[in-house]
Amino acid sequence: VQLQASGGGLVQAGGSLRLSCAASGGIFSTYYMGWFRQVPGKEREFVADISWDGGRTYYADSVKGRFTTSRDNAENAVYLQMNSLKSEDTAVYYCAAKFGGRVNYDSWGQGTLVTVSS
Image 1 (cartoon, one colour):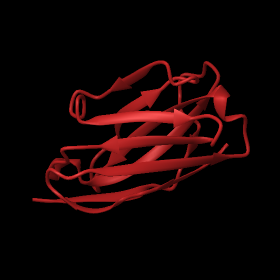
Image 2: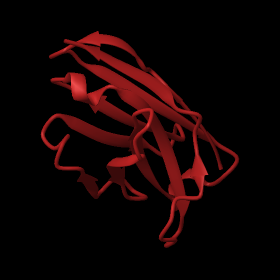
Image 3: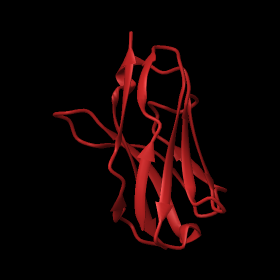
């Protein structure tokens, strides 16, 4: 599956952004979807994931209560709503997919930059 993330930009602290990730080339509902982020010079970190049908979500402690992920299998898309943004949320955000019951994510989007100004 090919992934393309969008929706990044510059926002003030306390503001909101909604990231989108469009998928193509696979049966989207068979992929578990995740969001990750990376700051230059640091390791990529997990942000959130969502199950095949959207019925289960999981969040990193650092974003819990502020970020919400959702998906629309009819539109082959997954979303990350980010509220109450903080400067430490500044990073390149990536969406990723893993097929079926695989452990590791095997498809990655190109990333979209989120910059939060304080």
